[in-house]
Amino acid sequence: MASDIDSVKTEPQLSIELLESVQDRVLWLAMQLVHHANNIRKNPDGTKVGGHQASSASIVTLMTSLYFDFMNNQDRISVKPHGSPVFHAIQYLLGNLDSSYLTELRAYHGLQAYPSRTKDPDLVDFSTGSVGLGPVAPNFASIVRSYNNSHNHGDNLKGRYISIVGDAELDEGSVWEAIAEPAMQDASDILWVVDLNRQSLDRIIPGIRVGAWRDMFVANGWHVVEAKYGALLEDAFRLPNGEMLREAIDRMSNQVYQRLLRVNSEELRSWLPAYTAYPEEMKKFISGWNDEELSRLFHNLGGHDLSTLRKAFQETDKTDEPSVVFAYTLKGYRLPSVGDPQNHSVTLSDSQMEELRENLNIEPGNTWGGFDSQSEESQFLKSTSEKLRRIDVVTPPPKENIPWDFGRRYSGYMSTQQIFGLVLTDMSRSLG
Image 1 (cartoon, rainbow, N blue to C red):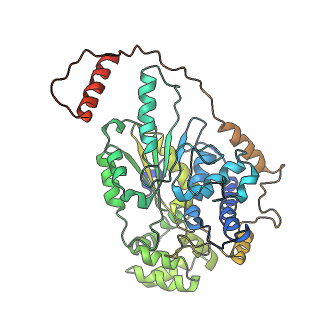
Image 2 (image 1 turned 120 degrees about the vertical axis):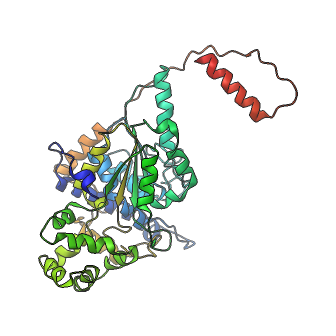
Image 3 (image 1 turned 30 degrees about the vertical axis):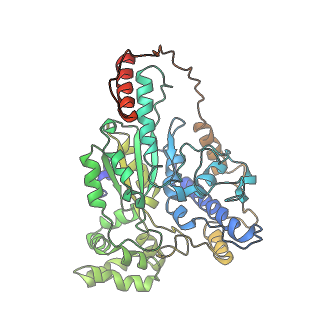
């Protein structure tokens, strides 16, 4: 499964350790945005403000990889609705969002619950509040830019159109209508990244139809990449008897896998042998990792492995087709609520936030701070901000000689829809 991306050779690039450090700060800020709104900011009526810490955590690695290791200033991105805190955290670290907004999530004139072009103060490319519309908007933006460029009306930019898509959004009919659009079959600038955390609002999905989804994308001319396992698991699979571990994880239902994310290492060691035909060999195989290492190994999905995502995204640049990356993730990644079927709207307590602060190495008293100005991370953020700075292209309006009348006469009664279709047909012939 991971063979899709293992064969891609990469040039020397940013260290994974640097990217992981930035990822940890993004995760902390995103969680703190929601925590402050619910537990610290004054709330006279006591109504829950809400927010989506678990859903945000599932895309933190995807967003870190895209913004800090893949995208350029010509790319445009649509972020899934419940990923808003991660988006704002990244914009803050890049210097595109004033710190005063960090305490204003879901406040009046503050940061919106979903990315909004009209209401958010930072630069949002696509509003994504309406489920199913956010993913497809970049597709049609790509078509419009292609048309404009071919008619000398465009900006001639060559960036990608990227969509972060929640796996539940693939239940929307509008998504599949867009995927099947013939005009997109050669649109190599379109990239979808499916956040495959296999959970919905209130449960773990028993069966995710990844195989069927993959076949549907392929049938409509898309290039498909799967980022299922991270580098640690792939290395383990290549060891003698490593295929037993792959088999065990593959055979588990989503419910069992998510449950095992929450058990201690002793219980994990007792469960894994039950999912292979060679339990004694499995016990011996996993004894090669201590408890902490085994837990980290079991959590190592491709959607949370920066080296795996780097290879996956690089592969999408090598095709002439639109691409989709199925990135397996954990809803509640690195949070106490990971794997909990009810974690969709759960917010962390004060003590859980303190535990998270320690796990992410955030200095006490630096709740909203970035990195030390002399640190490698700070210099990297500055260079990334410059790299992603938008190019303002002023495009004059086209000078088209649009006729007032096409000389067409209509007999009898016709519907406005029929007349509109005839007008569009005449315009296309007249304007070429």
